[in-house]
Length: 218
Image (cartoon, rainbow, N blue to C red; front, side):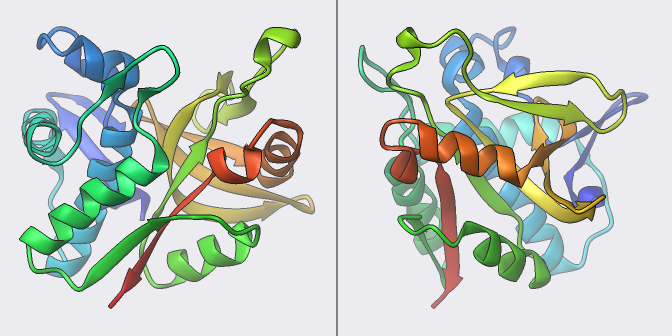
Protein backbone atom coordinates (compact mmCIF):
# COMPACT_ATOMS: atom_id res chain seq x y z
CA UNK A 1 0.00 0.00 0.00
CA UNK A 2 3.01 2.29 0.39
CA UNK A 3 3.23 2.62 -3.40
CA UNK A 4 -0.32 4.02 -3.47
CA UNK A 5 0.92 6.89 -1.28
CA UNK A 6 3.78 7.90 -3.56
CA UNK A 7 3.74 11.54 -4.60
CA UNK A 8 6.38 12.95 -6.95
CA UNK A 9 7.80 16.41 -7.52
CA UNK A 10 10.46 16.43 -10.25
CA UNK A 11 13.07 13.99 -8.92
CA UNK A 12 11.78 13.97 -5.34
CA UNK A 13 9.28 11.45 -4.01
CA UNK A 14 7.16 11.45 -0.88
CA UNK A 15 5.11 8.93 1.07
CA UNK A 16 1.83 10.82 1.29
CA UNK A 17 1.25 14.53 1.52
CA UNK A 18 2.81 17.14 3.77
CA UNK A 19 0.89 19.98 5.41
CA UNK A 20 4.09 22.03 5.27
CA UNK A 21 3.64 22.44 1.52
CA UNK A 22 0.75 24.86 2.04
CA UNK A 23 2.41 27.77 3.83
CA UNK A 24 4.01 29.04 0.62
CA UNK A 25 0.59 28.78 -1.05
CA UNK A 26 -0.92 31.14 1.52
CA UNK A 27 -2.69 28.58 3.71
CA UNK A 28 -1.13 29.02 7.13
CA UNK A 29 -4.05 27.22 8.77
CA UNK A 30 -3.38 24.06 6.75
CA UNK A 31 0.35 24.30 7.49
CA UNK A 32 -0.30 24.55 11.23
CA UNK A 33 -3.44 22.49 11.79
CA UNK A 34 -4.12 20.63 8.54
CA UNK A 35 -2.84 17.16 9.44
CA UNK A 36 -6.42 15.83 9.45
CA UNK A 37 -7.10 17.08 5.92
CA UNK A 38 -3.82 15.58 4.71
CA UNK A 39 -4.67 12.24 6.35
CA UNK A 40 -8.09 12.23 4.66
CA UNK A 41 -6.62 13.07 1.27
CA UNK A 42 -3.95 10.39 1.70
CA UNK A 43 -6.74 7.92 2.46
CA UNK A 44 -8.80 9.00 -0.55
CA UNK A 45 -5.76 8.80 -2.84
CA UNK A 46 -5.25 5.17 -1.79
CA UNK A 47 -8.98 4.46 -2.08
CA UNK A 48 -9.33 5.77 -5.63
CA UNK A 49 -6.15 4.04 -6.77
CA UNK A 50 -7.57 0.80 -5.42
CA UNK A 51 -10.92 1.35 -7.14
CA UNK A 52 -9.31 2.00 -10.52
CA UNK A 53 -6.40 -0.39 -9.92
CA UNK A 54 -4.12 2.47 -10.87
CA UNK A 55 -0.35 2.23 -10.68
CA UNK A 56 0.14 5.86 -11.70
CA UNK A 57 2.05 8.15 -9.35
CA UNK A 58 0.33 11.34 -8.26
CA UNK A 59 2.22 14.61 -8.70
CA UNK A 60 2.66 17.08 -5.86
CA UNK A 61 0.68 19.70 -7.78
CA UNK A 62 -2.24 17.31 -8.32
CA UNK A 63 -2.26 16.33 -4.65
CA UNK A 64 -2.17 19.92 -3.37
CA UNK A 65 -5.03 20.86 -5.72
CA UNK A 66 -7.06 17.93 -4.36
CA UNK A 67 -6.33 18.96 -0.76
CA UNK A 68 -7.50 22.51 -1.44
CA UNK A 69 -10.72 21.23 -3.01
CA UNK A 70 -11.44 19.04 0.04
CA UNK A 71 -10.48 21.90 2.37
CA UNK A 72 -12.81 24.40 0.73
CA UNK A 73 -15.75 22.07 0.26
CA UNK A 74 -15.83 19.62 3.16
CA UNK A 75 -13.67 20.60 6.12
CA UNK A 76 -13.40 23.71 8.29
CA UNK A 77 -10.18 24.08 10.28
CA UNK A 78 -10.83 25.55 13.71
CA UNK A 79 -8.45 27.97 15.41
CA UNK A 80 -9.93 28.50 18.85
CA UNK A 81 -8.32 28.56 22.31
CA UNK A 82 -9.62 25.08 23.14
CA UNK A 83 -9.89 23.45 19.70
CA UNK A 84 -7.29 23.98 16.99
CA UNK A 85 -7.56 21.96 13.83
CA UNK A 86 -10.17 19.26 13.38
CA UNK A 87 -11.79 16.96 15.90
CA UNK A 88 -12.26 13.31 15.01
CA UNK A 89 -16.00 13.91 14.77
CA UNK A 90 -15.41 16.76 12.29
CA UNK A 91 -13.22 14.47 10.19
CA UNK A 92 -16.03 11.90 10.10
CA UNK A 93 -18.62 14.51 9.09
CA UNK A 94 -16.38 15.92 6.37
CA UNK A 95 -15.47 12.61 4.76
CA UNK A 96 -19.07 11.39 5.03
CA UNK A 97 -20.14 14.45 3.04
CA UNK A 98 -17.53 13.54 0.44
CA UNK A 99 -18.77 9.93 0.33
CA UNK A 100 -22.39 11.05 -0.07
CA UNK A 101 -21.66 13.58 -2.81
CA UNK A 102 -19.59 11.06 -4.74
CA UNK A 103 -22.20 8.29 -4.27
CA UNK A 104 -19.82 6.01 -2.39
CA UNK A 105 -21.28 3.28 -0.20
CA UNK A 106 -19.00 4.10 2.73
CA UNK A 107 -19.62 5.48 6.20
CA UNK A 108 -17.12 6.91 8.69
CA UNK A 109 -17.33 7.39 12.42
CA UNK A 110 -14.79 8.43 15.00
CA UNK A 111 -13.76 5.39 17.03
CA UNK A 112 -14.96 5.02 20.58
CA UNK A 113 -13.74 1.51 21.32
CA UNK A 114 -10.52 0.01 22.62
CA UNK A 115 -9.93 -2.84 20.14
CA UNK A 116 -7.97 -0.63 17.76
CA UNK A 117 -5.39 -3.21 16.67
CA UNK A 118 -7.95 -5.73 15.42
CA UNK A 119 -9.87 -3.02 13.58
CA UNK A 120 -6.71 -1.68 11.92
CA UNK A 121 -5.61 -5.14 10.82
CA UNK A 122 -9.05 -5.97 9.48
CA UNK A 123 -9.11 -2.77 7.43
CA UNK A 124 -5.56 -3.22 6.11
CA UNK A 125 -6.36 -6.77 5.00
CA UNK A 126 -9.17 -5.38 2.83
CA UNK A 127 -6.73 -2.93 1.26
CA UNK A 128 -8.00 0.10 3.14
CA UNK A 129 -5.57 2.28 5.16
CA UNK A 130 -6.63 3.76 8.49
CA UNK A 131 -6.55 7.32 9.82
CA UNK A 132 -5.09 7.39 13.33
CA UNK A 133 -5.36 10.30 15.72
CA UNK A 134 -2.73 10.85 18.40
CA UNK A 135 -4.72 13.21 20.56
CA UNK A 136 -3.57 16.19 22.61
CA UNK A 137 -2.61 15.71 26.24
CA UNK A 138 -4.84 18.17 28.02
CA UNK A 139 -2.61 18.01 31.11
CA UNK A 140 0.65 18.41 29.18
CA UNK A 141 1.51 21.61 31.05
CA UNK A 142 2.21 19.37 34.06
CA UNK A 143 4.64 17.12 32.17
CA UNK A 144 8.19 17.47 30.89
CA UNK A 145 7.64 15.35 27.78
CA UNK A 146 4.62 14.82 25.59
CA UNK A 147 3.70 12.84 22.51
CA UNK A 148 4.78 9.54 21.03
CA UNK A 149 8.14 8.85 19.45
CA UNK A 150 8.14 7.61 15.86
CA UNK A 151 11.07 6.43 13.75
CA UNK A 152 11.75 7.52 10.18
CA UNK A 153 11.83 4.35 8.08
CA UNK A 154 14.54 5.62 5.71
CA UNK A 155 16.87 7.55 8.02
CA UNK A 156 16.23 6.03 11.43
CA UNK A 157 15.81 9.52 12.88
CA UNK A 158 13.13 9.95 15.53
CA UNK A 159 10.39 12.55 15.92
CA UNK A 160 7.51 13.16 18.31
CA UNK A 161 3.88 13.26 17.25
CA UNK A 162 1.28 14.95 19.38
CA UNK A 163 -2.21 16.27 18.61
CA UNK A 164 -1.66 14.87 15.13
CA UNK A 165 -3.42 12.71 12.54
CA UNK A 166 -1.50 10.18 10.45
CA UNK A 167 -2.41 7.44 7.99
CA UNK A 168 -1.60 3.83 8.85
CA UNK A 169 -0.69 1.95 5.68
CA UNK A 170 0.92 -1.20 7.12
CA UNK A 171 1.34 -3.30 10.25
CA UNK A 172 4.38 -5.42 11.07
CA UNK A 173 5.80 -7.45 13.93
CA UNK A 174 9.49 -6.92 14.54
CA UNK A 175 11.38 -8.76 17.27
CA UNK A 176 8.12 -9.48 19.04
CA UNK A 177 6.94 -5.85 18.97
CA UNK A 178 4.02 -4.58 16.92
CA UNK A 179 4.38 -1.50 14.73
CA UNK A 180 2.08 0.68 12.67
CA UNK A 181 3.71 2.02 9.51
CA UNK A 182 2.39 5.52 9.04
CA UNK A 183 2.53 8.42 6.61
CA UNK A 184 3.17 11.88 8.07
CA UNK A 185 4.88 15.04 6.74
CA UNK A 186 5.40 13.30 3.39
CA UNK A 187 7.52 10.55 4.93
CA UNK A 188 7.10 7.02 6.24
CA UNK A 189 7.52 6.34 9.95
CA UNK A 190 6.91 3.43 12.25
CA UNK A 191 5.08 3.78 15.53
CA UNK A 192 5.16 1.13 18.24
CA UNK A 193 1.64 0.03 19.09
CA UNK A 194 2.63 -0.41 22.74
CA UNK A 195 3.74 3.25 22.88
CA UNK A 196 0.41 4.35 21.42
CA UNK A 197 -1.58 2.35 23.98
CA UNK A 198 0.59 3.66 26.82
CA UNK A 199 0.02 7.25 25.66
CA UNK A 200 -3.70 6.64 25.19
CA UNK A 201 -4.04 5.34 28.74
CA UNK A 202 -2.03 8.02 30.49
CA UNK A 203 -3.59 11.08 28.80
CA UNK A 204 -6.82 12.71 29.91
CA UNK A 205 -9.69 11.53 27.66
CA UNK A 206 -7.14 9.47 25.73
CA UNK A 207 -9.74 6.78 24.95
CA UNK A 208 -11.64 9.39 22.95
CA UNK A 209 -8.94 11.73 21.62
CA UNK A 210 -6.45 9.03 20.58
CA UNK A 211 -8.35 6.69 18.33
CA UNK A 212 -9.07 5.81 14.71
CA UNK A 213 -11.50 6.93 12.05
CA UNK A 214 -13.52 3.79 11.38
CA UNK A 215 -14.71 3.50 7.78
CA UNK A 216 -17.13 0.76 6.74
CA UNK A 217 -19.03 -0.31 3.66
CA UNK A 218 -22.78 0.29 3.83
